[in-house]
Amino acid sequence: MINQGKFVQLLNSLGIDFFVGVPDSYLNGFCTYLLENIEEKNNLIAANEGNAIALAAGYYFSTGKIPMVYLQNSGMGNMLNPLLSLADKDVYKVPMVLLIGWRGEPGTNDWAQHKMQGEITLPLLDLVQIPYIIAENNDELLGLQVINLVDIAKTERKPVAIVAKKNVFTTEKKGSLIPDNRFPLFREEAIEAILDIMPKDSIFVATTGRATRELYFLRERRNEGHEHDFLNVGSMGHTSSVAFTIALANPQRNVICLDGDSAALMHLGAFSMVSKVNVPNLLHVVLNNGAHESVGGQPSAGMRVDFTTIAHGCGYATIGGAICSKTEIEDSIQKLSGRMNAGFIDIHIKNGMLGKLPPLNISHEQLITDLMNELISNKEEKK
Image 1 (spheres, helix red, strand yellow):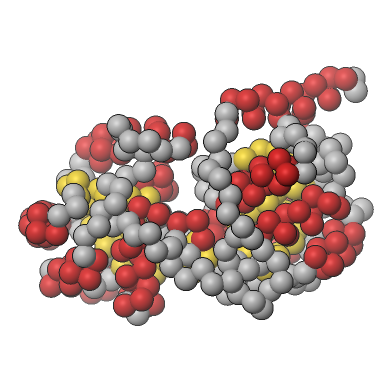
Image 2 (cartoon, rainbow, N blue to C red; image 1 turned 120 degrees about the vertical axis):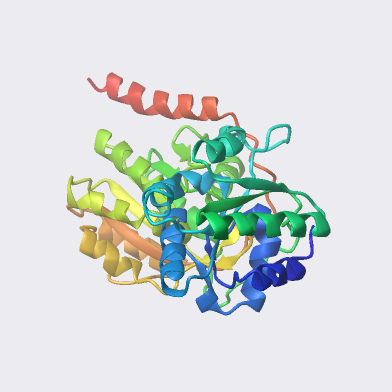
């Protein structure tokens, strides 16, 4: 790993003192350094990567200084619209430095959801005409490359990129994941409480990150199958949308969306879908620990946002506020039973995990085949 302090000092010497982005596990050493050494107003953790590009643009318009935007390459899709229609050379010519974690780098062993993104990362940068360097684990070499890259950003007024391979900006330290003892439950315990109270044929749709792993291994421990579950291993922020149409197409089944606070914030507009079409069989649960936990524990706005009020305003039936205990989970689900529209619960939980879990080595094809057979076959049988 490079020396993160020296890297940030180099950026400062080049006039870069504003950072904004979405944390990534390949950048967790860098993100942790920013969190511990940079004021929050100069290190904004954005809702999504497009949001980060726009925030960076506003900073440049106000100061004339080049900002840095950090992200995982999976977020490149989110950033493309403002990057091409706001920051582009033919629009407002906004210089910025993108620091991109290269998940799924060809020739490395990574999870399936990163494979295609890793293959197209460099071709995509070439396609949108963004100059880039590939960061190696060498402080001196990286320094020289960054000086040249920032000069291009300044003189040509355009975005440039640093593509970060594994272990260059990565540390084993995962940030502050000390359990928040204000809340009694870990995420796994909250999920199991919901499993216990919902009908056995309920469909569970779990968000990106640790919720998918914990749901999977809870099923294993409970000797239950996986045919009632959709594990949204990628596409962060889109879990509730998948759950929405599963509920819409299967009105006879209870559908529970196990969302995360960071994921829900990433595409918060998806909440409004329940105002368009009634799906009373959908229960949307945000498992809220106020952190980007699986990539390093950096804080989200989850504990600062009143999800319940937002959900109510979007058309959900709610219980009036956040909850945190097993008894409250049981009572809330009971209160929301018989509702006329989709239900929503914000559960405040501890950071971290109840116990260690093995990696999620699954067959995506088998999981989706089993779920589709469960949903489609049951409907065919009832005709």
